[in-house]
Length: 378
Ligand code: ATP
Ligand code: MG
Figure 1 (cartoon, rainbow, N blue to C red):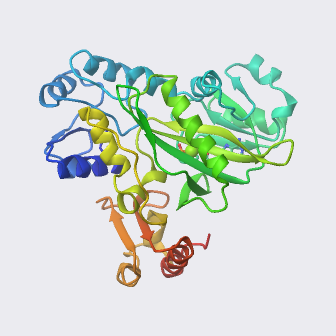
Figure 2: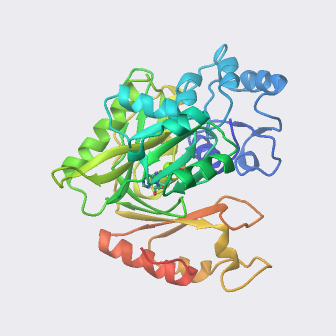
């Protein structure tokens, strides 16, 4: 379900293992639809298309967080669907997600649900300055506003159409981490190494593994939390949990869960080139009921997201391909482009993963690529 780049990389992994694939997405040029055996061109709620998908597929998964939960429920009547509609519904709603973190015993940022004028008026002063986020449908920093005080909070909520929102306190982040966990129907779960993420303008820009300077106790704790979050909703499939690292009362680094995605994640793209099994391989195994083995990182890695902006560096239209020839002359460069013909600022066009012998070498090569592409250093 869903034809974006995550679906495309899943299709690649499934096909490498000999499976045929079907993609449901209304866009005839969707990145996954272009490479799949079957491409059902229809809306996620199209009854006939869902019936056809159930007919051609032995198992169903989703690459798009906002696939309507009822569509997954319909498919689940006749086919194994992983993750379940219930798990996806939790991840689709920031308020439900935060309540779930608490249920799993994992701390999250202090927050309040803003769903009425009364809730707005009652919002605790301690949540300011804060970030107001729409409860549903936000991604890549969209549907969010930073608010310094009550006046800004009121006007931001009006600008967001008085949609149901959560107001979170703005935390002083030391760093951001994420963990990808894969959990089978038998409850066995494995995790990838903890990765460190850098966001720019609310969009993931750089992922580094191993996460630099993260004590192993903190990395272990992040993996434990991700597994607890998956287990407490009886999750089946690949799940990514994003964490903030903040200073605790004693000054020691402390983990706070930010959000989760019920699918492979942009911060796990490096696993294709730097691990012996990728996040997409494990998604295939989860669906097929095959054994989940602990993935091994065989090389340090740095992943750079390639946004459409890179096609317009140094001037305006027309779009011009970035300097791939020079980038690919760097050792350890793995270029992934998603087959999107139309470059637009902010649009995820591809990613570039560097693998190397040491974290220092790998970072140095990635920095050279940044200089060639006109990306800021990290
Ligand atoms: P995604 O594309 O990952 O789904 P999103 O639009 O859902 O992103 P969030 O992950 O909630 O957004 O926030 C995007 C980024 O904004 C975070 O990675 C972090 O850098 C910053 N941010 C979000 N919430 C807070 C907070 N409470 N305090 C400080 N920074 C925050
Ligand atoms: Mg996020």
